Length: 207
Image 1 (cartoon, helix red, strand yellow):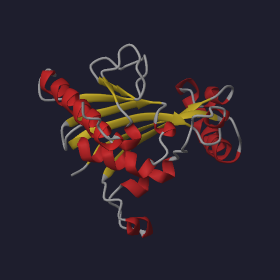
Image 2 (cartoon, helix red, strand yellow):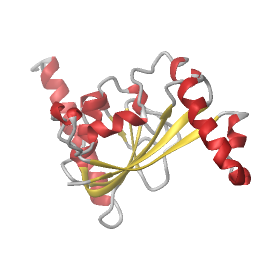
Image 3 (tube, helix red, strand yellow):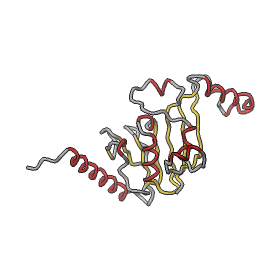
């Protein structure tokens, strides 16, 4: 009996994963396919769940560090909740998401804020994502475009999830105090620790 090399075994597994991904896409209702990256056991309803461990509800098990098992321009939307910080190569992750997404696809993800204990207490975290980083993945013409990352995401929004007691100042109930509280929140989240727990970011793929 022939013994496959380790590299050959990896290629066979990759082909099987890609086949599974294509089958799930073909079975999806309509022409829109949505993916939940790093979903764990909390997969978003209506999404194909992708993770690197075998858990209930996961549809595709693969090493996302090595790429997403989808063909080019087949995905209509990507959702991820506290997963991007677990990937060591942030540039590769964004390039893979851009590759598999259709023009106009929406990408929504949530990550720990860089000045929060949430970011540093987990020993499996490998990356820090900050809002200022997103411009490197746009088509803006500035010194950052010299890196030739070759993605074009439009930034639709950044939402800050404030920790107590700062969340009270961000509440719509005290909107009449925003001329005072908003500058204070800007200062606090920039220079103080544990003001913001996490950030939710919404992007659109432009091709």
